[in-house]
Amino acid sequence: MQINFLPILRYDETLYSIAARTRLQNAARDDREACRSLFGPSSNIRIAEFPVNLSRFCEATGGHFGDPREVLLGTTLCGFFERIGGPPWRAAKWRRPVETAGYGLATLSNGNVNTWRGCPYCVESDLSTYGISHWRRAHQLPMAFFCLIHHTPLKLSIAPNNDRHIRFLLPEQTTLTTDYWSVNIASYEGVLVRLSKLASDALFYISDIPDLTSSHAVMLRALGSRGILTTTGKIRNEEFAAEFSQRYSFLKHNADFRESLSPEGLGILARSFRRANSWRRPQHNLLLIDWLFGSWQGYLEHCMWQAVMDCPGLAKAEMNPPCPADDQLIHRRVCLEFMNNRALPLRSEFFLVARTSFKWLLRNDTKWFDLNFPDARCTAAQAHLF
Image (cartoon, rainbow, N blue to C red):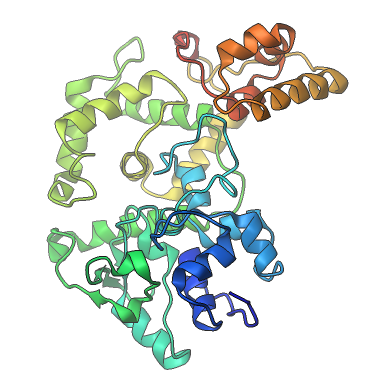
């Protein structure tokens, strides 16, 4: 596809929507060819799951929408999951950047290949203003129940079977259902609006995000103030599950929350507090923030206080002596060369090949090492954090 025209980026528009509107304004053999032109060659023939290479996208569009990082944060849910945690995609073993890792188009844009929501009033407004509608990121969030612009419940977008596999679809080309949430909207409207606003605030937050240690500490502190912790700082599983389930039991029948609010899901959530960097479902983290702090801003203020005060017993910062910059560059280069020369790099193999660099990075550059190299198969218990 030869790109001669590029659309104007709409407010809160998803990457999928931009690609769809770009395809409409330029001639191509079919939508799959358009995807190859925008995101690079791939054997995947499903449009919604087409692997995304944002470096190729920015090159194809001449940087019209910004650099790869700007496109990632401005048109996908990646920034949201960086702040909330629990992204639907798991980092590959070699820790490739999300911009070029090849995650699916709908997964990056909507958080899930099966999540397609819209607001009929937004679609009507788009059609009357622009003659074409677009998908909005805020409507695809894990706890987006309401359109906060029109104060109306969001609808599920339904398309004919397999249509999303072979062509781009914009909201007006699908059917917006009226029966989706399986929740009594009238009885819980205030709560659902609050949850929707919490998720939206997290999406549009642009300042520094709290680190995992501070976030873990403030949540433990808040749970302790509610009598959910033992004297040794462990979760009282039964009391925790009872409180959490009672507060959000009205969501159990919704497909997006069924697993999260099941006994097994609550057990996993309780066990996640054993470590500061445990993975949690985004639904769990959002409901925890709503329960413990009431709003995104309240959560941030507690994290800021925790980071400044560094309360003993809750967050013990590991202080490493400053390292010479030359040594850091040398050992990082050795590590990156090793990973680039292996299809599936392993820490155990790196230890055998470059023992000195392995020990130095593990001891003096732990944060960079954990971020850029596969996790160890087993890690020591971090009891010293509590």
